[in-house]
Length: 215
Image (cartoon, rainbow, N blue to C red):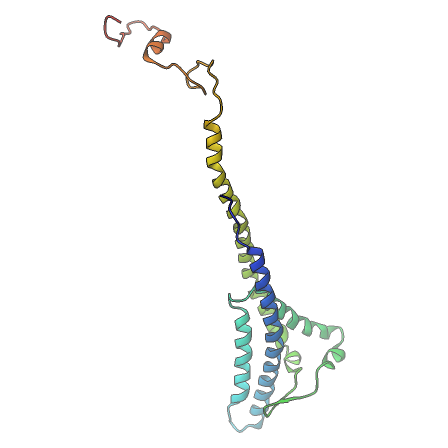
C-alpha cells in the first residue's frame, strides 16, 4: 500500500501566511500602545500629583500582550522575527536621516482622551530594544523548526523502505536456486547428512567412531 506523506509544506505555508497577517496588525498597534503608554506615564508623573497612570499602564500591558501572543507556539516565528526586524530597522534608520524618519510621524495623536506622540518609542530607543529581544528570542524556535522539518523528511522515506521490505523478501525466496551446487553452507540444496559428514571427516589417530557398530 503506498504511503502518502502528510502535506507538511502546505500547512507550514498557511501558518506563515496567517502569522504574517497577525504581525501586520499587532506590530503597528503595539507601537501605538507603547506611544500612548510612555507619553501618558511621563505626563502623569510630571504633574507631581502622585496619581498612578492607569490608562497608560493599560496601554503598555496591551502592547506587551500583543507582542507576547506573537511569541507563542500558535504562530510561526516568522511573525515576531519580522516585527522585531521592523522595530530595530526603524531606529537604525535614524543613523541615515533622523529628520526624514521623524517627519514620517504626526506630531500628536489623540484617542479616547489620551494624547501621545507616535514617535515616542522611536525617540526613546524602545523600538531598538524590543526589536533586538524579539529577533534573538526567535533563534531557538527557528532551530527547532529546521530539526522538525528534517525529521519529517526522513520519516516518509523510512516508512517507504519498511513497506518495500516484504516485496524484497518475496523476490529473494522466489528466485531460482543453483541445484548443481553441493557445497555446505551455500545458497542452494545441500547434502549435510551424517553419512556425508563422516565420509569427508578427516580420520584422527585414536579417534572413536560415534556411529553404532554394523554401519
